[in-house]
Image (cartoon, rainbow, N blue to C red; front, side, top):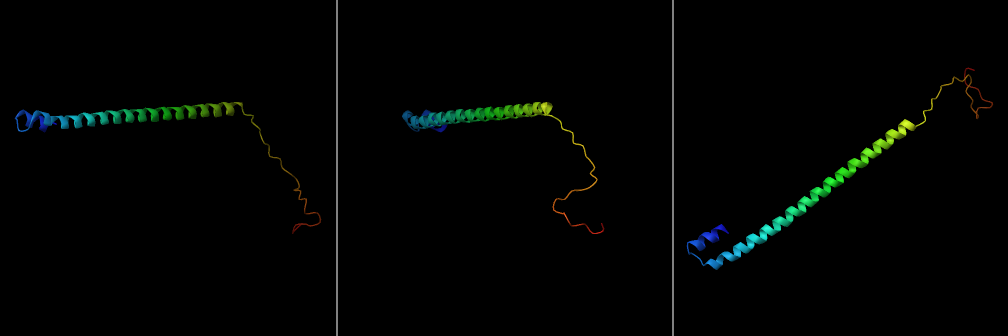
Length: 97
């Protein structure tokens, strides 16, 4: 564009020859403007999705913490058995008995 304006200013080419390069420049700037808008929308959408994901993770952690506080704690006691019962060893004895 700048070269077209300079050549038209020094009368190497006619003034109306600047129009094609001006139209191309305006079209290119319009395409860039649309691309920037699309990129910004995509970044905002990704940021919203990230924030939503983090919010769901926080809610899940809070729910798990609340469930852990309300959980019933069962204490198992180890009992010592005197004799081990084996229902399939009716008439058999172990070696050394």
